[in-house]
Image 1: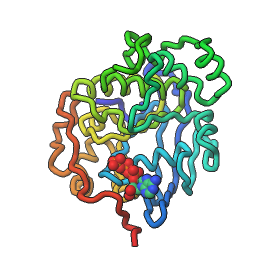
Image 2: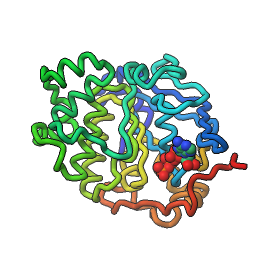
Image 3: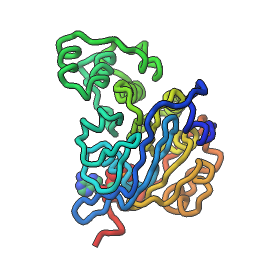
Length: 289
Ligand SMILES: Nc1ncnc2c1ncn2[C@@H]1O[C@H](COP(=O)(O)OP(=O)(O)OP(=O)(O)O)[C@@H](O)[C@H]1O
């Protein structure tokens, strides 16, 4: 299991103080027309901490990542290392230290893995991307490839990679920009149990090196095994927050999300990918009228 939250939040794996910036989100609200996708949601992610964000389909998890990273309008406070990000463009938030992945691992299929990582490294600076990627003067930074265990793939074109490999490249590309906080949207979707277990180990390494990670995923085997803390959303509100053990025993979470598909002993990396039942009808909100 993982290091206690307090220790994980304040020190890196080497025992040195984590130098990164904390993400602090307070009262985040997002409305799409009549649908309140997020309603006064508050979440923090410390450097060196892995926070899971879970909930039924339509609970608002992707909307949370979109709003924090500047891809959808929101109200509320978003602070990174004390700096206010609300109102900044997505590019400015990336330059400030946020990185993200997307539900669909949309890699540049005609580029190699190395070139994809290089694009990720220079996303905030298009002039540098043009010079070093498009004009072929790429800097070869293999650090994130080592962290994700994909150095043997560096010179392979992404077209033709297996689904699990694509997910690892996608996470590595998001990490290549050296974000302080990385927000991952369903990185384990489509992975088998072994691939998911590998991803868990790799993510733990990333976090132990000092990066704060927010992990959205339906793979409860992964989330329960690897996260320091879990926040549960339901209908755009925080339903519960706590350690994986506390969340597994929370009756409201069991009723709204976990159901009986995730027995207590599933919080092990070798458990099957437990995916809780889907909400009968997504897309509604308690604010709907
Ligand atoms: N662009 C949009 N326009 C209108 N409504 C949207 C939009 N994006 C999301 N929603 C609505 O906002 C709510 C939250 O959706 P969101 O995709 O954030 O949920 P989620 O928890 O990520 O779901 P899933 O687990 O299925 O990915 C849902 O009711 C959804 O229908």
